Amino acid sequence: MNACEVLDDLLAGQGFDPGVNKTSRNECNTGKIDAWAVGLALDPVQGLAEFTKTDPNATSTDINGRRALQSAKAGGNCDIAIEVAEHARAVIGVTAGVHDDGCPIAKQYAEKLEPKLPKVQ
Image (tube, rainbow, N blue to C red; front, side):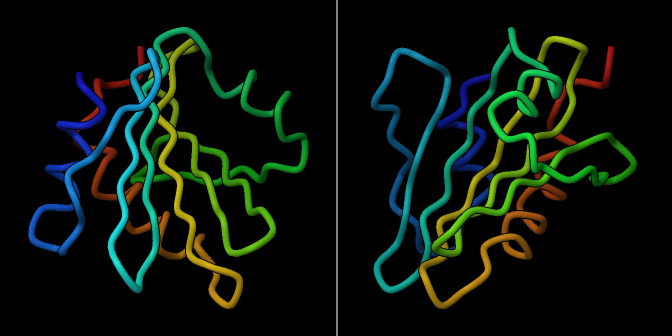
């Protein structure tokens, strides 16, 4: 799966610019004027356990019945990591701005993303 293709499909018709991958990793970011930015990282090596190492305050949640972790950060930022396998995950992140909470937006996108992911192995 290509993160930019998946992200563009997820955000189709919502006025976002096409996603851009600025690293060698399978991750993609986009935004739209006067709104928020959205990012997607598809990681075939690190699972939810590694996500908690980078954010020990992440809270357990589920997305359409699949295990996930939510990490709210300062400034309206929120990441949701969805389990794909023990050592694989998809992370959808939203930067909503200092006056907004990105987690409800991230959860909506995560719920749309989840059916596109391979089933947990």
